[in-house]
Image (tube, rainbow over all chains, first blue to last red; front, side, top):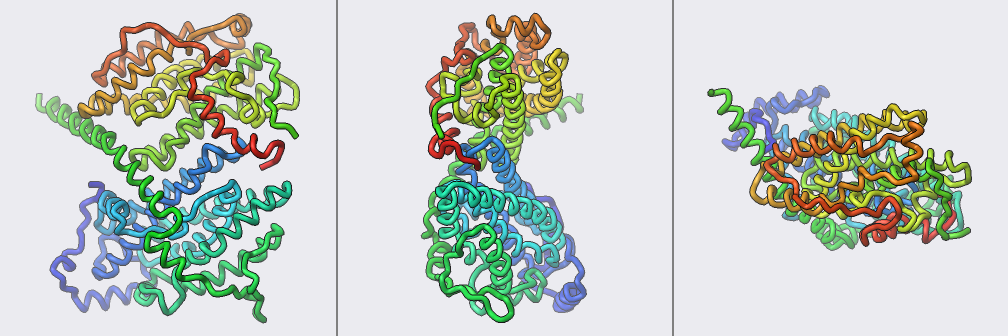
Length: 330
Length: 258
């Protein structure tokens, strides 16, 4: 157990919530106060945040796999070191986020077990394969770019540990995004073969990246309460539009074509994209993306094959504690 | 454009730098294979960290080899355009990761050496090598502490971890002798004070290793036969597969900038 013995909501255990406390809680949220782990909070707030933060943590950890796929094949030593450092950063984000989730009373093991059992979700984007080196550039540019769009408002999230984690995570993601764009720039200034590789990667990643923002407004399950609790500050479609508006000029600068022939710019300057294939999104979430099975299998393998190591570490720590107690008693 | 191997006139100084660069790159590459697959997230971080240190050392040493050579080779040409027979790393570092015990025993044997080696090399009369040594020594000290702590945990952990750690020691022991070997090419550099004589480090290395192995309730093998060949390009079968992966982009798309 990694969980600290924080005073986990006794009120929820009894299934009763004090209406006065709930009103006071909402007043604090409305006044833009930060909620801290030991503060009273509604059970549903705790549950929503535990789900969101742990999904975010799982995404960071599963997200190590598609990019990790290229660490051993990076085309130069500089790229190899940068990619390894980037994937390591993502692992750090995962750890940081699991720690934030633990302040809500669930242990890292419980959360990880739920992911390995297929009960907890992670971002749909990591169920797509990285086929060429250009995918590494595209992930940095677009996937990290979309993540930043989502996460910057989370720096003002009402739950203190999550908001603080996001400040640090966003700084690193922004560095990754620039690194990814620089890979794309190098490819687009390179040979015809390299430019074609960059365009092909954009073609494959564009629509799945737009799906990262979640279902369209009105269909999203969790938006209303999350907005009320100031966990969510912008709607899925608002964030998606912001992302598209920021990205189109970047693609133009690279000389790449967004794979959406129906895209137009409206009078206000917004780039209006075509209908997203939500059937694909639902299928990927349901476990039918190209890599869902591989990703979970890889995480389970690491977990299962590592169990003897974790057991050894625990056994040694117990022996050492026992020896120290025995010594102290002498 | 050519995908041919580069030719390297191996003057003693160039060869000396390449051998250490190859050690660092190949071991760093092996460790990077763990990223995303380690037994716990903390070790994904730690093994990646060590890999990054080693790849950093390799880049400095390759750059120095390029400078010493004075031709148009660079760190990437050395790494990506030499084949198995041109690689000069120790056999120890190319051995597959195996299980976590094998990775950590390999790291422990190497880091216990590298820690002493880089500390001694800080006194090199070659200013660049001395500077690389000063940086690498700090890193190696951490690598040694990390791996030694794991050897103790695994050896003195559960029956299973003890058996795995012992099997790893038995398997890798024969690759440790090569770290202390010197050939004619290096003898001149040692005499000139550019390099240090690694044979002089062996007693201290054995003392460190024995101390940790004993604390871990493990044992060193009795067999003293030592494998050699990496320094002159006679490798195990494992290295070719590692290089085919490492070099795949440069070999598939020759002469491009990435």
